[in-house]
Amino acid sequence: MTRPLALRVSDLTFHYPDGRMALESISFEITEGESVAIIGPNGAGKSTLLLHLNGVLPGRRRYAHSHDFPVPEHQHTDEPRVWVYETPVVEANYPEVRRMVGLLFQDPDDQLFCPTVLEDVAFGPRNLGYSTEEAVRIAREALAAVGLEGYEDRLPQHLSFGERKRVCLAGVLACDPKIVALDEPTSNLDPRARRQFIELIRSLERTTLIATHDLELVLELCERVLVLDHGRLFADGPAEELLGDERLMEKHGLEVPLSLRYGRRVPE
Ligand code: ADP
Image (cartoon, rainbow, N blue to C red; front, side):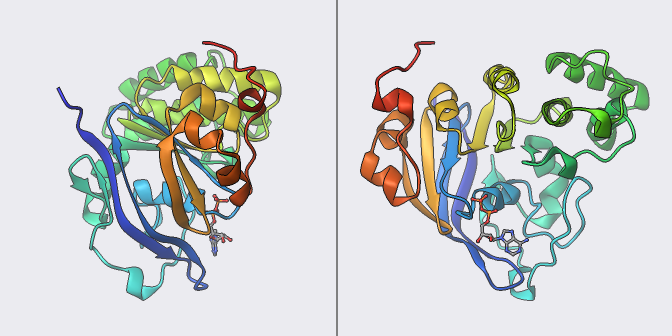
C-alpha cells in the first residue's frame, strides 16, 4: 500500500518585511513516515521554511507559542503553497494544521512561557480541547517520555538548556502531532544531552523534519536530505549520497561528515 503524502510544498517564496528574500520557489514533497533533514549554511532559510509548515509564517495573527511577524501586505494571500496531508496551510486551517504539525523551536525560550513545566506541557492539550485533568495526565506522560518525570513543578527558567529543550519536546509530543518539525534540536547541547536527544527523536516514530548543522545526526536519523542555500533548494536526495558529495557540501558551506570521510560510521 502506498503511503500518503504528509507534506507538500509548492513554489513557496517568502520575503521578510524588510524585503529580504528568505525562500525562493521551494518545492518538495514528504511521504508519511519519512525522516528528512534540511541542511545548509546559516541564513539558508531553514528556520523560515519550518515556520511555514504550520502557519507561524506568513502569519497575520499572533501565535501563542511564537513570534509576531508583521508580514507585508502582498503576502497576505490565502493562496496555499504548503499542504499538510490534504489540508492547505491557510489561516482558516491553522488550528487543524497545528494539530498535525508539531514544531520544536531552536531556542526553548521562544517556546516556554508558563510558570511551571507541567503547565507548559499541558498548554497544548488544553488548547486542543482536553479537560484540565486530561491535559495534566497527557502532560505527565509526555514528560515521562522525555525523561523528565519529577520535573512537573519546576520553573522552566531554572532548568538547564538541555532540560528546557526536552520540556519543549514534551510539549510537542503532548499534542500528538502526525508530523514533527525540529529546528536545530542538538545545538548547544553537551555530548550526553545530545545523545539523549538523538535517541528521543529516534523513538518518535512519525514523519520527521529536522533542520540541523549536526550532519552526524542526519546520518543516524534521516534517510533523505534537502540542501538549502540562499533560500533556494539545491539538492534533494539520499542522505549518505548527498552528505558524501564533497563538491556539493563545500559549495554550500558544509563539510562531509567525518564518519563518512573516514568510514568510521558506527552501525546501528
Ligand atoms: P537558517 O535557519 O537557515 O539559518 P533563517 O530562516 O533563519 O535561516 O534566515 C533566512 C534569511 O532570512 C536570512 O537571510 C536571515 O537573515 C533572514 N531573516 C530571518 N529572520 C528574519 C526576520 N525576522 N526579519 C528579517 N530577516 C530575517
